[in-house]
Length: 135
Image 1 (cartoon, rainbow, N blue to C red):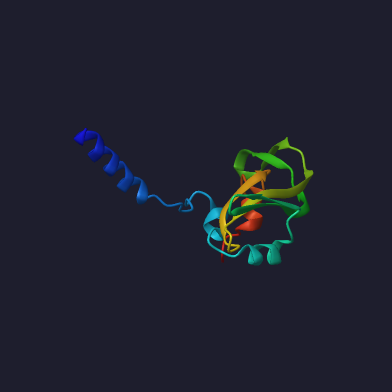
Image 2 (cartoon, rainbow, N blue to C red; image 1 turned 135 degrees about the vertical axis):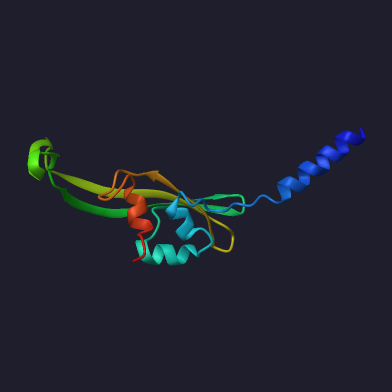
């Protein structure tokens, strides 16, 4: 019985130290978690819908609509010259959709991409649009 009590107390202490910290691998969370949703919506436009879940509100947001022309890709040729074409030029329609969870005080607690496509400079257009690299 004593062992169970000590184990339960140790587990409670370990869990008490857990917090939600944005991971370095998710630039959108790193940029927006802890900030006011008002700042986000002022910068990127209003949400398309919202729903209550307990003391939290989850907003669905869409935006970042943009057409871009992606140039053709070529293989490396001899002597540094352009080789055979490996991908044709195309036009891509970029867009992003995210779910933003806020606390009762309108602070962003979580932001999760729902619809994302490859961006111009990387695997995530949402990351490029919502958390651009600072220069």
